[in-house]
Amino acid sequence: MLPSSSSPHRSGRGGFTLAEALLAATVLAIVSATATLPFAAGIQQTNSAAEMDQAVALGQAMMEEVLSRPFTAPDGFTSGATRDTFEALDDFNGFAETSGDLRDFQNVEITDETVSGFWRTVSVTPVTFANQAAYDTGNLVRVEVRVFRDNALLVRLARIATREQ
Image (cartoon, rainbow, N blue to C red; front, side):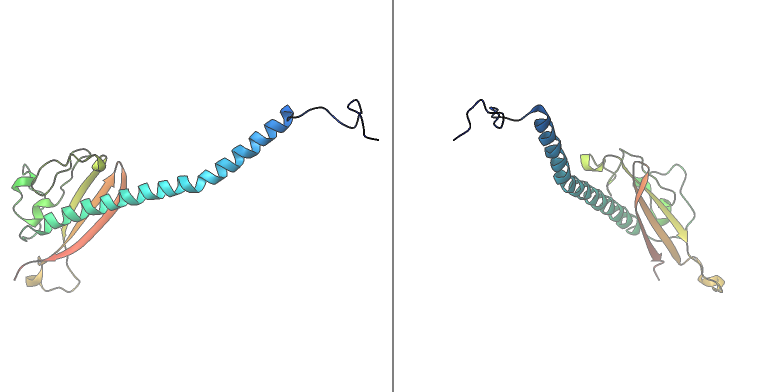
């Protein structure tokens, strides 16, 4: 004989209890969070790589601008001079741009939003060696360009330049 609907062994419910629904929602939330973490990490890595690419491009552009000038013995940053009046490589020593005021090699402001927060500094220092002959000094300089984003150093590029013979 089949049990009747009034039998204590059969409940007449057709859905979930509140506890079951809460448990299912919790499990779904945990699975969703776990599944989205790799995507968030991937986006963060992509943004970081793009930021580094931009920093390298800005550093290389500045390095090329500095090295395009004629060589002279480093005598420091020329007081009162501006970038568009720099005549020699050593005039860039101590040069620094401020965030939001990046300029290209023609001294035209770079207005691209992707450079927001970036700034650069340049140092030009003489290179000498132990036991170097006195007549042979002043022929080498080390040019260093540093690129920052906000206050974080992202890129440091260095090159050795030599006096034209």
